[in-house]
Image 1 (spheres, one colour):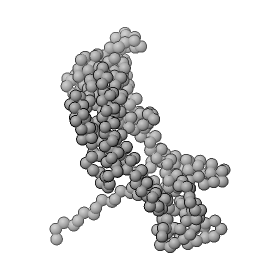
Image 2 (image 1 turned 45 degrees about the horizontal axis):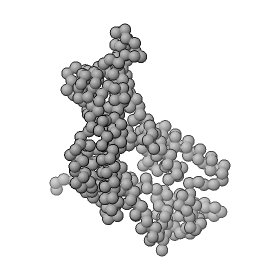
Image 3 (image 1 turned 60 degrees about the vertical axis):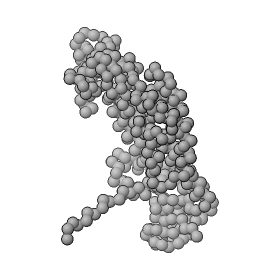
Image 4 (image 1 turned 30 degrees about the vertical axis):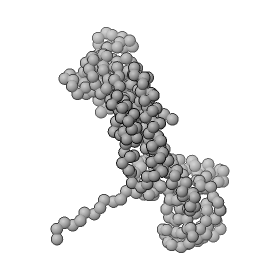
Length: 163
Length: 192
């Protein structure tokens, strides 16, 4: 389709030249035909660019919402260069955060208490939190640091436990 | 706000606009279904998407007719009861398209008309946003894109306010993860 439009565009330009008219100033039927084909090309390009750009924006936001590893159901929807983009974006953020020595992706909601009571929903297994390891088995309750719990909650593996 | 990548701005450009060609154009016969050759003749009346109509107007190749959604009939309906008029059916980008068309057409009364329509409908949207809950009601199917966003914003801030008053967990699973599509229903074995 794109190729066809381009071909029509070139044909019309050729036609103007063959009639020995100045391509800069001629405003005949061939000129407007060519203009329409040219505008169509630009329009198609804009649609495609916008599609890619908006996907890229969403992919960027995933790093902040979900974390460095994407669940399979999302990952299988990305193409190769999008996966690369996600990895590179993730690496860039992590490099910056390790320079600052601060995890920027947590505490998006201002915390009231540095500790939080959570219920484990999925089998997470042994996890090393700070200076000790705890076993996060389903349905168990824990009282842990909010910053540690936050990534698990975002991924849907635990929930805040409220009395 | 408007950018090259703006999806709404692109979709707005797809709205059909009736134009009259002031000069013919060769090799674009597919734009005019009535054309027997591959060309559009001079003074042919054709529906073009807004983005193309706009560009050609700037090059003085076409003149633009005011679309029927801003006709006298619509104006009378709006005057009678603004909130009951189905604007989405007329154009999901009723206001935005009107604003963009205004410099291109001779009829300047579209501007005040749009403002009147928007302000009178806005009141209704705010009132309804507090009372409706759950499934999409009949009312919201009549709203333009912009109005639906307003309704949704009003509704979600009301929900957030109620949640804040009750108190509760403020940390939740990322909303994008909940959107997993359900697998198709297994087909029932037929017969005995």
